[in-house]
Image (cartoon, rainbow, N blue to C red; front, top):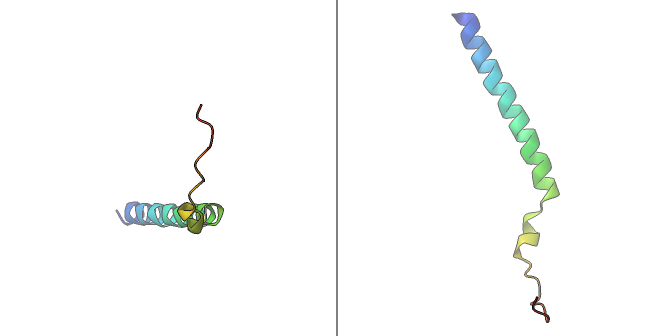
Length: 46
């Protein structure tokens, strides 16, 4: 039973580390301060 608990806890830890790494790189690629910039209204309507 102990090996099952250790396996599950280890798997959760690895998923957490991978998730944190993914969020770190996504956070660097998508800066939040650019989300406040509004594009100018286009002059031509298509």
